[in-house]
Length: 88
Image 1: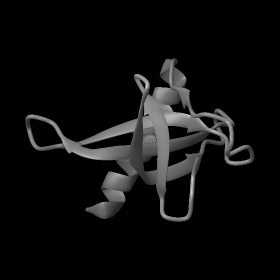
Image 2 (image 1 turned 30 degrees about the horizontal axis):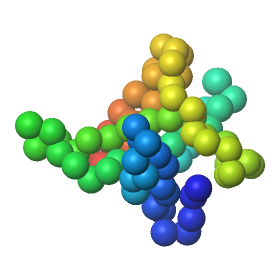
Image 3 (image 1 turned 135 degrees about the vertical axis):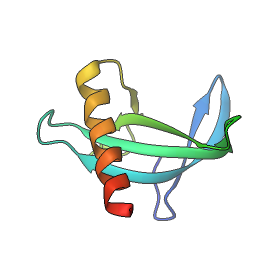
């Protein structure tokens, strides 16, 4: 599913789409690995549309998992805030 070009493909509503990987990171708090990615589309306010999921770097053949709890979303939001702060 993942390759060296930082592009991966997966099916969304039965249609295969390509996504660009923006970041991957591991949370020591949750013990999970996360992937932040985009389809390079923009919303009405011209913000890049991004997605996040749980992924399995030791088992790349396994599909990514949707984030379904607040603790995981908090880890992703904290990571993005830290990346944003470092960028400024």
